[in-house]
Image 1 (cartoon, rainbow, N blue to C red):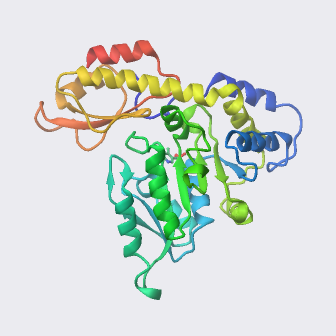
Image 2 (cartoon, rainbow, N blue to C red; image 1 turned 30 degrees about the vertical axis):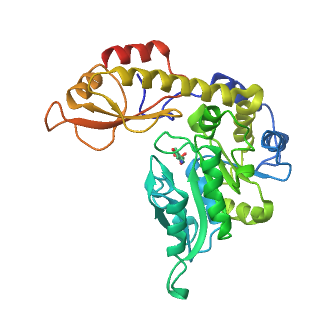
Image 3 (tube, helix red, strand yellow; image 1 turned 180 degrees about the vertical axis):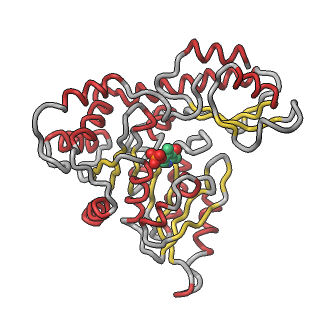
Length: 347
Ligand SMILES: *Cc1c(COP(=O)(O)O)cnc(C)c1O
């Protein structure tokens, strides 16, 4: 009953096999080998973006930070949601890589900014001349940190506001595949066709060992990205092992199958939560993350039986037994239906 995060799960066996196949003889270093060229072409095809630039890095924090830094001056501010990973969970790496740029937090509901909220935040910045921050890119997360998914209309409405102010747009797609699986649209529709300029394309949380692709749909800042990646110590020399993982991921739709499995497991959990006494869902679980409030006594029972997940705000130790405490449950591609059943019967 592993619901702590989708990065606690195993790597898909096909990815391990690809790593073994890549582990033959010698290959040029730093991404100059054939595998990286092949993966780049695969991504260009999947995204219907023949001019896109693709660079592999090992963490989502690196992908986010390097992409944003390549499009943000030190005196700029990046517009993002209040609950965004770049704000809450990256130890100020984006600000560090940007050389001192800051984040402007946009009010957020269900993990999403509204176009009006984004507009108000943008209008409030760059109003103080040299004394204040200048307007930088807009970053949004798909699927969101709260497990919701922006519709294509919502994405377009947000990027339209950005475009009005001539701001670049970044998508944190740590759970890109999960969102895509929910919307059932094409990768192009969920990105550049919806006005997204750059994408952190997640892999690790969806069955890879540790690879994310930074994708620049507009290649103008490619050189800057590459220089920042090297300077930031994120250019891997034995790069073929990154490329091999990503190739296995994209081959025969493995990435989509894994995301669909993770999402289905989350839907099963959600159905159980809807029926469970004393439980209530906090957001609409539209991908592979679910937030719910449960009585303290229920948490105790679940933890005692070995369930793994994170309480969100609150403590198990002290307080009334019937007090409800929020918790987050995340499913991954390897979620086992019989574990889910056991969990739900406990619940
Ligand atoms: C996990 C995650 C990342 C990347 O995290 P790393 O630990 O740096 O790989 C980025 N954005 C979101 C929304 C995430 O959930």
